[in-house]
Image (tube, rainbow, N blue to C red):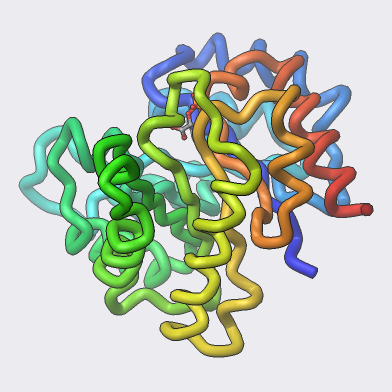
Length: 252
Ligand code: PGA
């Protein structure tokens, strides 16, 4: 069975001081997990202090983005060696906000994911359709193409996929477990084509308005191996409730 992975994507929220007070509230109840990978992706500016606050817990750090180049004239960007210095184990690449607001292409996402793996870190590669694409009946075609292009050159070994329907992100409109499972099963099938037997060990997270009151039904689906959570990860209480829900899936 795949080990579930629950990741907090804080986006552009929380100062370093906020991150430390989150950790102080969160760690007593959820800081030691045997069966679930718990990951937090804070803003870059909070990585250092959050790392210190998480010391001794099983929670791992992620970055929300990275530049694929090792160094150089890229004003405003951050490199993998800079992230490694702060103990990041994962990097989210291709989040729909990066794709939509900052025009990131799947080819760029693939270059980032390849670079992440090259540095010995694990990419969380995000894919997902817009509402318009879903209404046109194009969901599987869009997700399939995003996967093919965003995974070019990427190995199946240390890989996490996040399926995040754009219409469910930050909207309170979660995908039903059936809709999510349908796409996750499709993603798994695609991964089998790309990576043969390794595909069954790749974890596929669902993301988009995951909350403590809808998570259990999502986690009960056979191809949903965890969640990538925005809004509900900002409060220590709701994120620790999510940890318990995902952990009970692992144990059940
Ligand atoms: P949400 O965000 O949980 O606030 O919908 C999820 C994400 O964007 O990763």
